[in-house]
Length: 208
Image (cartoon, rainbow, N blue to C red; front, side, top):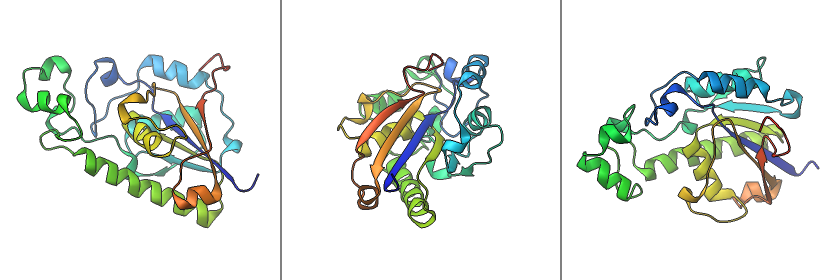
């Protein structure tokens, strides 16, 4: 149907930094061997999509290249992960005695990582990226955009637009997986929640 827009949000593959359980944020890390194997086994049809977007960080661009080797996505800096400031590339073990870290763990909506982004700044940045996306959809008659981004970005968008309301921390998005959000065009224009949500790759896909 021409009035349905299906937005796919896909989390980048597992990185070496993720394997260490480090806060990567705006720093980058290469995809792990496991991620390369997983992503190359996923069979998505590029002709099914009509607009490709990626965070400008290399782990997302590398994921897009493995999924769609011939695609050159538009880069959205707005869809970067939270900037973890002084916590970037460090693990819980590195930080557990840090008072600022303990405050942030206790309430990451009120406290910010030193020299990093607050949650409000993070949310406002994603909102700008979403508005940019919706504008492109409306102006260019896009119906099936595919976005490779980060776990925090996807959880925030789901919090805002999923049909069932859940808190940010209640959403779980594993590496190399994501969600399809289906909107009626008028609902998307008005900033309303989507009409349906589906995991991708679908659970019936053995590579999912």
